[in-house]
Image (cartoon, rainbow, N blue to C red; front, side, top):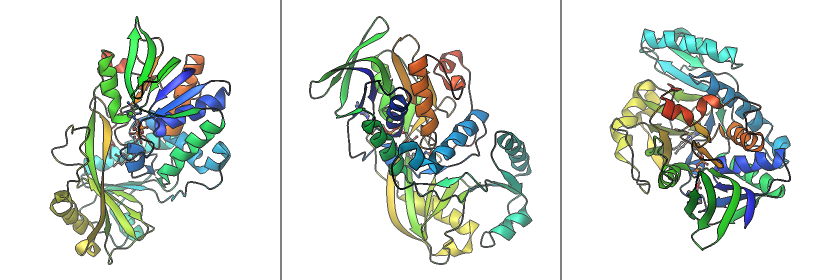
Length: 388
Ligand SMILES: Cc1cc2nc3c(=O)[nH]c(=O)nc-3n(C[C@H](O)[C@H](O)[C@H](O)COP(=O)(O)OP(=O)(O)OC[C@H]3O[C@@H](n4cnc5c(N)ncnc54)[C@H](O)[C@@H]3O)c2cc1C
C-alpha cells in the first residue's frame, strides 16, 4: 500500500492530523494506523479532558484560544451532530505566597493580551465566590471566567476520526513494528501482520511509544512516560457541581464530575515509569490527597473513593511542552509528542499545524516554530510553568 501520508497512532493527535490533512487538501491519501482500536491505554481516553487558557507561555495560550473555538463549534467543524458537552466552569489557580500572587498578576496580563479573560482575585473575593472553601492561607487566585472547563474527550477523538474517514482517510488496525529508513528518508512501515506501507510523509503520533520508535532511527528526545493515578470521589457534604477546576497550592487538583469530584496529585517522587505500568497508586488518596482536600474544605471530611484509573503522560522533561515538527536529519518524518498532560486541548491546533506543515512546508495559521524539535538540540527551552 502507498499513501501520501501515513500516521502512526490513532489517538487524538493522529486523528486530528488526519482530519486537517483531508479537510485542507481533500485529495491527499492518508492512512491512520492504530495498534489498539479500543484505546484502552491511550492518554486520550484516560485524560481528565479539560481545557484552560491559563498557561505561562504565550504560544500555549494561542494554541488553547484555537482549541476552545474548535470545541465550541465542534458540530460545524466536523459536520457531526451532538456537541462535546463543554462545561465552561473555569480553572481556579490558588496561591499562598505573595510572590506567587505577583507572578499570577504578570501572567494574567500576558494571557489577557492573547485574548483570555483571566482575572486575579484577592482572598475576600475568593471567599465571596466560593464560600465553602477555606481561604485563610491564600493570598490570591487566578480564574478564567470563560473559555475554560471540560468536555467529552472521546467525542473529540471520534469527531476527528469520523470526519477524516468520511473525507477519505483509511483507518488501519495494526501495530507498526518497524520503520525502515535510509539516507534521511523513510522507506516503509512494517505492521505486525506483515503489511507494508510506504508514504510520502510519516507522522509519529504514538504517544508514550514515540520516543522508542525514534530511538530505533537514532534520534533521542527527552520524553518519558509518567504515571498519573486519578480518583473519582464522592463527598456528600461537599457537592459543588458548579465549582471550577481547582489547582491547589498543596499539589492536588480537583474538579466536579457531576455530583462527585475528580482529583489527582503529582507524586513527590515523580519520575519515569515502565511503559506498561498502569497499576494505580492507591495509597496516594489516603496519604496525600484526602488530607489536602479536607484542609481546603470541611465538607471533604467524609469522602469515599468511587473509581480509580491510571494514565501516562508523554512527559517532556526538557521544558514540559509539545514537540511538533519535522525530525532533524529526515526529509519526510514528522513528530507530535511531549504533551506533558495538556495535549487533548491542544489537538485541534496541533493537528492543523502538522497538516499545514506537511502540505505547504511551513507554519501557516499559527507559528509553532518555537515548539519544533530543533530547540532540543539548540538547548532553547520554552518552559511551561503551569503544568498540572
Ligand atoms: C491522567 C491524564 C489526564 C490528562 N488530562 C488532560 C487534560 O485535562 N487536558 C488536556 O488537554 N490533556 C490532558 N491529558 C493529556 C492528553 O490526554 C494527551 O496529551 C493526549 O491525549 C495525547 O494524545 P496522543 O494522540 O499524542 O497520544 P495517545 O492518546 O496515547 O495515542 C497514541 C496512540 O498511538 C497508538 N500506538 C502506539 N504505538 C503504536 C504502534 N507501534 N503502531 C500503531 N499505533 C500505536 C496507541 O495505541 C495510542 O492509541 C491528560 C493525560 C492523562 C494521562
